[in-house]
Length: 189
Image (cartoon, rainbow, N blue to C red; front, side, top):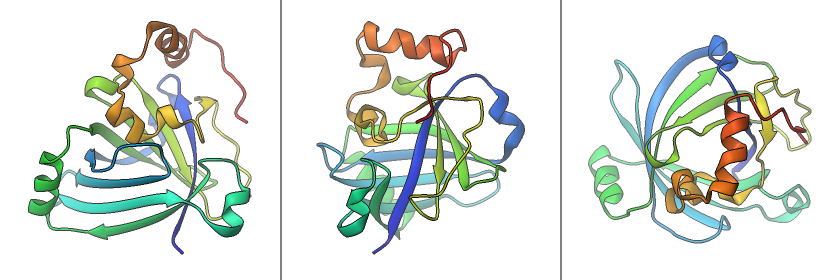
C-alpha cells in the first residue's frame, strides 16, 4: 500500500529561502468535495526549462497499523501521470483550485518543501516534510511557526473549497500576525 507520511507547518518569515534549490508552479484542482477521508486531485506542474507534467492523485485515510498514528500524519496515496491535455480538461471541470509556488529545500530529516500560495489563499506559506516512517524524529526549523499536521482547514483540498481569504477575520488575523513574525512562535507538537 503506497503511503504518504507527512508533517506540515505554517511558515513565518523568509529564512527558509536560503535552503531553496529549485521551484515549480503548481496548479491543482479537486474533483471530490468533502472531508479529507478521500480526495481526488489533478495537478499540473510547470518548472523552468522543462515540459509541464501532470498527475491524477487519490488520497485516502490510512488503514491497518497506520491508523494508530495522529490524524493526517499517514495517508494512502495513489498517483498516476496523465497527459497534459487530460489534466487541463479535468481542471476545467471543477471550481475548486489551488495555485502555489513550491520550493524544494535542502534540509536534513526528510524531503522538505515550502508552498507559497497565491490567489485566494495568499499569503499562506506552508512547509511540508515527507518522512520514511511515521515515528521519524524531526527538528522543525525556527521558521516553522505552528504545526498544522491533521488540521483539515489547512489541507489543500479544504483551501480549494474554503480559501484563506474567505475565512472570518478572527481566524485569519492571528495567523497573519504569526506569518509576519509578530505573533510569537507556538509549539511544534
